[in-house]
Image 1 (cartoon, helix red, strand yellow):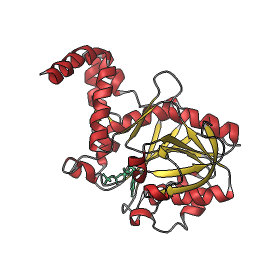
Image 2 (spheres, helix red, strand yellow; image 1 turned 120 degrees about the horizontal axis):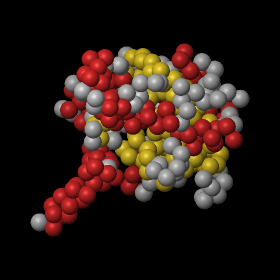
Image 3 (tube, helix red, strand yellow; image 1 turned 90 degrees about the vertical axis):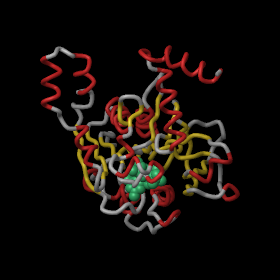
Length: 291
Ligand code: UTP
């Protein structure tokens, strides 16, 4: 069985929920505190043992490539000024191989993943959505947990969390076999953004996957589905009929930085966890709420 050494980060969407900010700045580059959203995801990949990352970009997303490029002049200046802490921050992601390909039209997540076919070859691979951050402060990063399940169960793994009824129709929803309390169990069916009355459960797909390369032959045949887009969920539903696919309720908190309210919550919670500013920020919030 192949080890999981490659990950794909789709980041080619239009980011319409953040217009007009995303006219010129990719939504994946919007910062949570002082780091772009996509860097948190790249760091999770590195901490999970990934060696090569393919970022799917599109027209107007050059800032992503520039961000992960080496910044010679900046690094040289920081070195000369002995600003070693800043230099360390700037170089944090410089050891990983990052590759890029452009999705020509935003025809959906499944369509974007199809661009990774050559890069992936015949190996299992991780998929991490470019606007979903997962933090597991006390344990293994989300993707690492899922790679461990892949290696143990020899099955594709879909990262899920329970969501309340009112949020079901915003997500891909998974019907699993096994007990409600099982952390990982076989998937029976996957449906993209079902209305609540048609949803097979409240288990929602949360932007992390480890997938067998067989998904590509299925994606090539996948017709546009929910929202007129080619959906990865539909191809995974086909995959579950041919191979073992497992839903896994990962440890950690998932932040939806691709949605305005989600972005705000992420920023506030990250600020409250940041040692250098958390005390002052807490006081500020308390004063604000009591005024
Ligand atoms: P989203 O639906 O959250 O992204 O897709 P979006 O389409 O950019 O957002 P809105 O709704 O217009 O605000 C989840 C992930 O899949 C990528 C997005 O970049 C995001 O990281 N994606 C989506 C693609 O790469 N290609 C697509 O055609 C669609």
